[in-house]
Image (cartoon, rainbow over all chains, first blue to last red; front, top):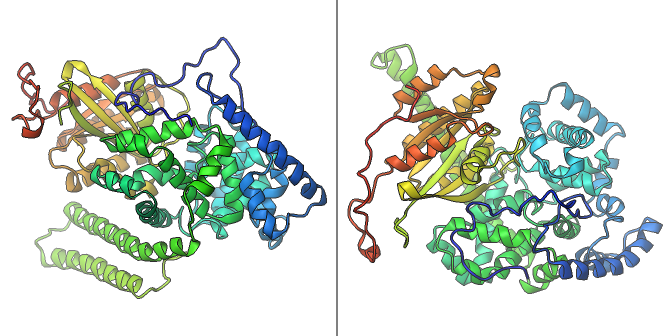
Length: 408
Length: 199
C-alpha cells in the first residue's frame, strides 16, 4: 500500500503537486488520465492488470453471446472487475439502464437534449462547470467532449427537473462518457439508473442534498461499529464524517481514486448498489487508520486520506480490502440506519430552512417602505412570521408521522 | 491556537458562489499557481499556508459554491477566525450571494470572525457587472475589508490574506496547557485597522 506512515503537518502546503515536467510525455491510463511521474505503484498496477486479463477471458464469452453471467456468478464477476472493453456493453445491462431506456420512446434522449438546449434552468451552472470537469483529460477537455458532456447534463436536468444539475454530476457523466465509448445516450441512461432509478439512495443530489446527509450519518454509525477507535478520534477532533466523505459519495470516488480503481468500484456499484460506497469508504479509512489516529486536525485527516486515495493504483488489493477486509455489511443494517437518520436530517434541514425564511422576512421588513411601528407594518410582519412558523410545525410533525411528503 | 513553532494557527474559510474563483484565489495564494480551468470543488478542500512575518499559519477551507451545498457550510465556518467571501465582478448574482454569506456569518458565525470581501476576476473589468463603488460601500457599511482581486493576474491576492493575518486578534495571555516554550513578546500589538483598501 502506498500510504506513508509518517505524520506531517506541512504536506498540504506549497509545492505538494508533482512537478509537471515538460521533458517527457506523461503516461496515461486507459481512460486518458495522467499517471503520476513519480511514486506510481507499478507493481500493484501490473498485478491488477493480470487479474483483469483473467477476467477478460471470462467476460468475453458472455459479451459475445450478449448474455450476462448467471445471478450466482454475476456479483462475483462484477466485484472482480469488468474489463474496460466489455464495460460499454455490460454497464447498461447490469445497471438496468437498458430496461429503463426501453420503457421510453426511442427519441427520448434527443428530445430531452433539445428541450435542455432550448432553455434548461441549469444551463448556466452546467456551462460554468464544463471546462472545470477533469480539465487534464484530453478528451473531456476537447470540443467533442465538452459538447457531449453538456448534452448529457442538460438532458438529465430536463428528465429530472426536481434535481436539475448538482455539482458532482459533471464528474460522473464525464466518466460514463469515457467508459461507454463516448456514447451519450448510454451515458445518459446509466446516469438515470444511478440517480433516478434506485441504484443510489434517494435524494442524494436533491436541492438540499438530503439523501447525502442521510448517507453520511449512516456511514458514521457504521464507522462506529467497524472502526470504533477512529470514530472516537474523529469525534474528539470535531471532524464530522461529512467533511471526509461527501465528495466520495457524490462523485462516487471518481475524483479521489485513480480512474482505473474508481471504475472497478463502479463495476460493483452498478450491480449491487450503494452498499459498495460504504465498503470503499470504510476500506480507505481502515487502510489509513493508524495515520489518521495521529492527526490532530480535521484538515490533516482529509489531506492524508486524499493523498492515500490518489495513490491507490493497486485496484485488485483495494477491492480486496473493500469486499473482504471490512467484514460483513448487511444491507438491512444500512437501511435501518437510514430510516433513523432520515427523520433527524429532514427535521434539521427544515429547521434551517425556516430559520432562513424568518431571517429573510425580518430583513425584508427592515428594508420595507412602510413604518414598522405602524399597526399595518407590525401586523403584516407578524403574519409573515406566523405563516412561516406554522408551516414549519406542520412539516416537522408530518415528517415525524412518517409522511412521505418529501421523499421525492 | 499556537503551535510548537510559535505560529498562531488560524482557521480561514472561503465562501461564495460557484465559479467565483474561491479555489483559484487559494491556489494563487498558497502555491502561486493559476489554471484557467480549476476543477470544481465538491465538498471542500483543505490547504495550509504559513505567513512567517505575521507569525500566522492559516488553515484554509475552500468550500463548494453551488447553493445546494450551503447546508454543509456551517461545518467549515464553525470556529473560523477569518472568512474570505468571494464574488465575481462580472456577475451581479454572485454579489447578492456574497451578501447572503455575510449575513449568515454575522448571525451564525464566530462573533469575532474577521471578514474580507473579494471581488474576483478584476482582470475582466470589461465585462464588469458590479461597480467597485457599490461593493466598497457595502463593505464599509458591514465592517468588511474589501479588495478587488485577480487570481489570474495575481492582483491583491496576497493583500487579502496578509491584511487578515495582521488583524487577527492575538491570544492575550498564554494558554496554560500550551505554555511550554512560547514567547509572543516580539509580536506587534493587534492592528486596529478596519478596512483593507479601496476606500
